[in-house]
Length: 87
Image (cartoon, rainbow, N blue to C red; front, side):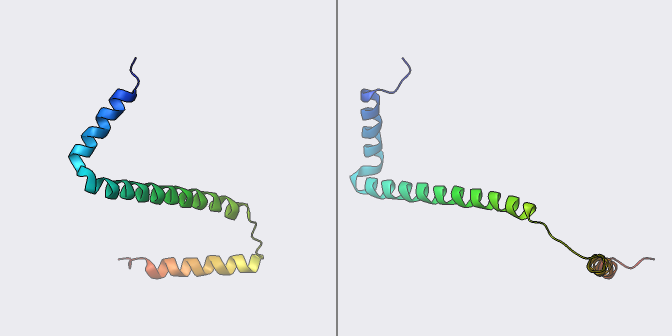
């Protein structure tokens, strides 16, 4: 009860055949296959991108106090340069 059986599936396929015709059905199937392939490729790429920040976060960076001071001074200078002039 409630499941799709063979008679229902045959009726759906006949309706699809009537709507799209026998010439467009292979094109439709091909485009659906390409879309599925592209979707799977996108999901795989998204999973790879999501995994890479973890690897970067675990990577330790060492810096001397002088290098840190120079970096902070550079960022402060850039912030002052980009800030609007005070009145």
